[in-house]
Length: 144
Image 1 (cartoon, rainbow, N blue to C red):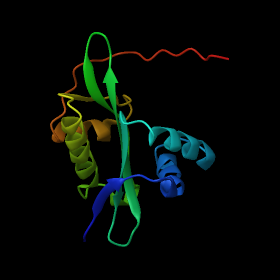
Image 2: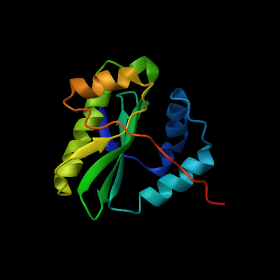
Image 3: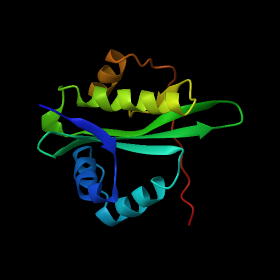
Image 4: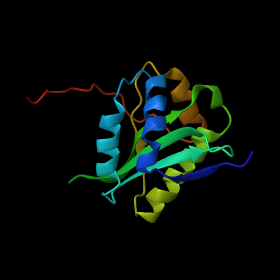
């Protein structure tokens, strides 16, 4: 089966939303459309789509560059592979495309955050070479 990894377009919104729901993210297509439209205009962000030979979208990944005063790296903003298509190398292909993007944009490191409940994802990341370097808590403040 021939597959391609390509940059996302606004035509992918429905499929991106459907994949988000598989990990429990309830997000409306309109919100994804607005966010993707914004991301596509920023060179420090990239969203890649895995498309199978029958044009079905089976996964996506978002990578972004982070420049902080104390360090600089690329970060995976999200990775989702269609549930029935997992364990077929799709996630690894998407992550390899992120490595290419990071290198092309002069980032020497890729980081990602993964919820403690996502043990299957942790095994995947370890298998493809990522190391757990930190445990932390996530704080938020709603700005109204």
